[in-house]
Structures are given as C-alpha cells and as structure tokens.
Image (cartoon, rainbow, N blue to C red; front, side, top):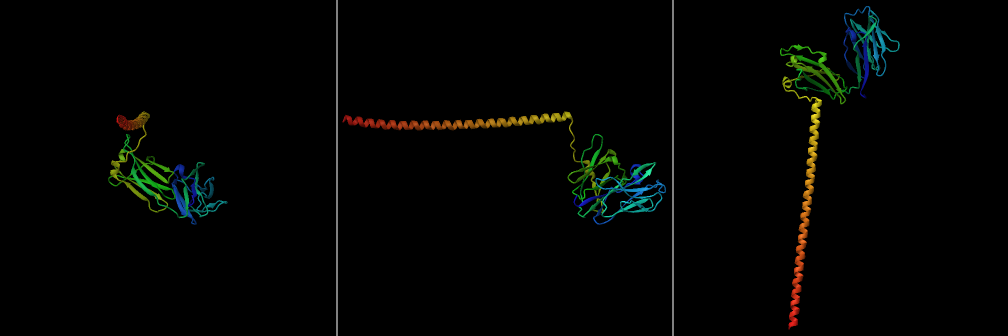
Length: 319
C-alpha cells in the first residue's frame, strides 16, 4: 500500500461486549502530516466515578499496547511512559489525539465485574491524498425464492482506499422508515477492488422503496442510490446450483452432444474422403480413355499409311 498506511485501532475497554460503548466509527482517514482525534462515548449506565477508561493501540503485526488511561472520576488522562498521546474528556465522551508519526489501531476498554470490556475500535488510515471515489451500482440479483425472499445488491468498485461503509434504508408507501435487521445484510469483498453489500428482503417488505448509501473517505457526502420499484417486479434471474440428479442429466446430455458432434465430424470426413476417391477414379478413367483413343488413332494412321505404301509397291511391280 504505497499511498496509504494503516494507522490505528483505538480500543476502549467497555463497549463491544456489553453494549456500554456507543459504537466507534469503523474507519477514519487523515492526510500524512496531520493529527487526528478519535473519540468514543460511554453509556450513561456506567458510573465513571468508579470506572477507569483505558486506551490501547495496535500496530500491524504487533500486540495491543496501552497508550493512556483515565482514572476513575478523573477529567484528565494519564499518559503511558513509553508513548505520548493527548487525551480529552467531555461528559461521557473520551478522546485521544494521534500525531502524524504515530501509526496504530486504537481501542478503549474498562472493567466490569473484574472483566475487561472492549469498544468496537477505529481503524485509522493515513493517505498521501491520492483518493478515488467509488463507482456505485444497485440492482436486484434474484427472482423471488420459494421462501418469498429476494436479494438486493449494492456494489462499490474502483475506489482508493478500498474501504467503504454501506447503509441500507427502506421506506413504505407513506414515506415512513422501515426497520432493517443486521442479519438481513451480508457483505462480500472481492480481490479486484470490489465490495458488495447484499440485502435479503422478505415478502412483507417487498413493496418498500430501498436505498443504498455508500460512505467513502474521499468525500464528506454519501453516495445514495435507490432501486426502482419496477426493477423489483422484473429482477435479473439468478443462476441456481443444480441438484445431483439435474447435474447427472446435464452431463449425460453434454456427452451425447459431444458424441453426436464427433459422429457428424467423422461422417463428414468419411464423405469427403469418398468424394475425393471418386473424383480421382473419374480422372484416372478419363485419362485412360483418352490414352486409348490416342492409341487407336495412332495405330489407324500407321495402318493407313502402311496400306497406301503397299498398294504403290504392288502397282509398280505390276507395271
């Protein structure tokens, strides 16, 4: 990655497991030479007067390392001896400022009942500024299945860096938002700089209008595309996997087609050979016939000349 370096994963020991952290931004980006502040918010159910907050970083290929912490009830952070960071606190929101020369993955945690609870963490990317906005496409990819479900697809490709965040929204005919569950969404990353988000839609939500939003670090505005209602009525057919019986039948038909093709090719080849043999036979026969005619004509001429000469000799003898 010449133009981009993975910088930091920030973890606060509280939220990922117990829900006591508001989820952090999955990723963030900054340009080389600039600082970046990353924050996380602790749930109001956590008593901060009794709960310390620790910030950790993780560089690529290395273990987690604590960079600073807020003691229970403290308003200022205590820095680690080995590294220096700037920490801040406003209400229940804690932040850490990362200098341009510190490359890490940052995460926070706290302790509940003697157990460490981690936040979701933020992955920070440092870029030289050579960013490329993704090309986004949306369309349905399957007909309605026997379980009355369809699959809608939102695809982002040809972007740099290759990190995007998909958000699906659904509106009913009255323009009201319809709740979508996380288990209805799937995401797939391909090797050719392509990321695809799929939304599984059941029969009850099929009449809604669906919008896919794609967030990329190259722009402050999300790309939003809606799937037209008529596209849902006439979706692109999906290719399903054949059953073992269908697969065996297909293989049998393919073998039969190959055998028929080989037989036709063989018949065509044999017919060509036969035609060529007949042609050669005809040419040979004509040549022999012409030779016989020429031979007959030559012999006839010689006999005629011979008879004429004999007649002249006999006449001379008689005289």
